[in-house]
Length: 531
Image (cartoon, rainbow, N blue to C red; front, side, top):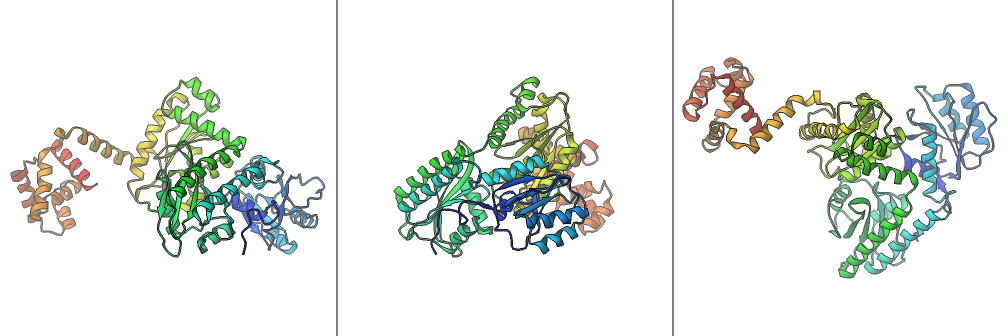
């Protein structure tokens, strides 16, 4: 079948597109009786006390409507009769079953918005998504889309295979449509659904690509033809990716240059098409990065980040745990997913991404608000990132000049939680204080090796060379607080055997376990050897 480079509905957005663009937890379908492909031309904010106006192909937003009111079901029937594409309500703890039944009976798509998202920001999100499809947004967006399609076709003509240009959510923004291009089933599925299938094979490739510079080659695997890919960047910031299926002869030097040129031009198209809210987010990101580095005074930080006087600041840090594999892409993907959740819920938040972590500043609400936001954010991205993301909550502060210190504490917490699989997914300093202290001791011993007790290293080396168990025996005894019987039971040896081993550590390695300070020093070093 021919693959057109224009939307099949003539450029109009659909209910399905809105759900895919905004998605859970901001927006989810309660009832969609075969109407997800209904076109959408705009939105209508309606007061339930007023008569409902005609709304052919409009999305009806109902602030002030309680889902369990009898009037709600009557409005569903009226909206279906007047031609609305969908109706959005907030359940606010209500069951909403009667409303869902009425929507299914009338054939109207019923959507639920998250309670914490303001109607104003939800409407802005909807209009932004509609604008990305050229609905009511003038010609610039359509021209930008046409430009990306033209770039994809130009690269395909050089390389000989199908080319797709994707955003960081792995949604297909544009694709080549040459009739004789080389293509496979994976690319067809991505084009038809406008999104790349989420399989481990693909996700691992994205992780590799986003961590690389220039063109990356991927061999044939799992039925997918060989591909060459490159990341679209604005400076160091990833904006998306370009994937080209190689011809049987490979891509050659001309093909690589075409991909590099395409990435540069695609970045210009994407940046040109960014709306004002995205530019404001980027501006705030730069300001927050400077504040976290301690570059400015309290007054300057407050001005740049629009922090109200006396506001209780909350700072969050997010990072991937050490056990994450290819299922979890690089920090750029995580930052993109978090931003999609956080911006509608807390439009006053500032978000900044570094190579290791994502930081979120809340100018109000302190640690409690930060913890609530972290819980919602982790729940919203769990489907894509599993349980491999950790969040750190810094102690609240009111002085913007203290953000650098709050950032250091956030980094300390993440250092512990990403390294330990059993660490809490959302943690404050109180949750990891002991583990952090041990890590800091390890740092000091790394910087000052002369502070280490030489007998501990000698004991570990002796065990390794001779198959003895002195180190594990000493550690078990120390962790049992000197209780020989408990430690021997834990080791599965006789108490006399353990006592013999403890005596021999003094003779062989010079450990003075009868001294409290020596016991503490030995225990710290043995714990660090376990890491």
